[in-house]
Image (tube, rainbow over all chains, first blue to last red; front, top):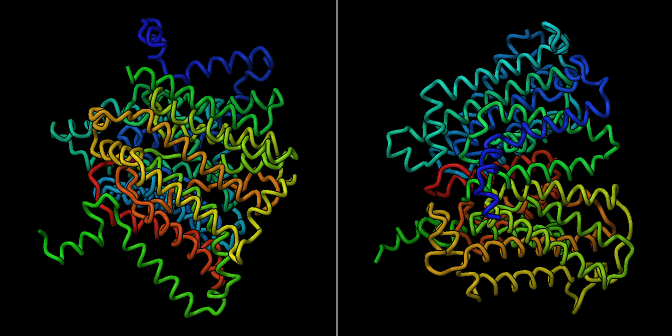
Length: 316
Length: 323
């Protein structure tokens, strides 16, 4: 096994995040089985559905690179969906909702960051606990029933197209590009890479470790808020169950994209293609008549193999 | 020698202790029990107490198992699926002498796979067990898409019966705790777990191995033990619901982690205690039982559980940042 791992070929092949290979395989399968599906219109509809996940992943990859994790996205999405759909702010405009959502996301992200970096609480526990609290709170406020309708403008914006592509998809690509710039061109991006490599080494090199972790979590909260806005626009109704599986899926897509705890070879585009893989994976499996159970198994095996792929390399 | 007041301070906050913060949750549990006994008439009744034990038992068994992997700085998210999987296998209408050893065999294999991926293939515990959760849940849904089937009568009797007037669930708890106590405090293996976890928590994964402790083997074994306890909890639940249910174990891993964390076991590893975990389980069980008696909606119960978890964890100090 170690001979295989140490060979030049394996090293070269494993430089590319697994999501790229998987996406090519999925597109080839789609091309052979249903060539008529491979046009911008149909693909755009599939991709549009995973935009909330894709935006959440942008935050997740940031916190995972500083060896943390954010599982509170489900709670944030539920809370913002409730604020918009329950009508507790009658007559509010779109701008008000956007500002409200971003403020909620920033506050929750900041709280997570302070707890993780200053109080040194386990990130798994604090974000999970926060999600549990938010879900319980929203379900209590709405007595477990779907709250109501979302203002029409959300769905109208969600359905617009721009130069032939659905605008949510373009928005997602733009945000991803911004995140890529943030990580590659700014001091903060360097700090993230340094903290991920080794916290003591970063600390002794003068990198503000605590501030970097707090900022990463705050940005992750902001991304969760944006994901919540898009998710709310996409389902166009209030719900008390929406988005609860997104945090776990976002961890999965991030790993598939070549970003594991503390390591960021996949950059920002690896996880981006990881999310696309999930979009097409479900399409391909539905096409071949694989049920929900089979999808779960495939999802699990794909994450595991992606992680083993990286683990083998990191261990040697 | 330290002064009595600082010793007491250390005891309450669990600072510098290998057992972690367990006294405060213990006081909370006692206070909750006393308060419930005074404010509600039903709490102290025999039927409610036996019900409390039977309801809390799956949580106790899974939490004790979870503690083994948490002590070595790991986490097992697959146990909820293992519980569902166990009930699905038991409800296959096969004879009990086949299915009962079968579930433990499968659980052992699942745990060994988790452990192998984590120790040899260098996969992060959260990632490895998360993907295992998906795989096992998928297989469970193939075996039993919706709840149904019947479990062997022997399993049913083991949960519903009683000996000497004492309900059998009590004995499940005693056996679980005795086995866990022997493994943790009555064997070399337990000492090794604390040593490995202490090394992981302080940032050097090789600390224990440098002292001649076979770290990889012991960590792998911890995941096997965790899965076996999950299968035991599944066996118990199958006897209680008398059928197989693919969703019965849903989110059980989170409750187990919550109970372990409330009991003072630190997620970075090396710090924790068996009695702490029992106290954590007691707090959660009393919380749900008490709020049912007081007619609090389940949604508020969820929120309070989250607040409690966060408060208790925030009180513990540790060095590590992140996971």
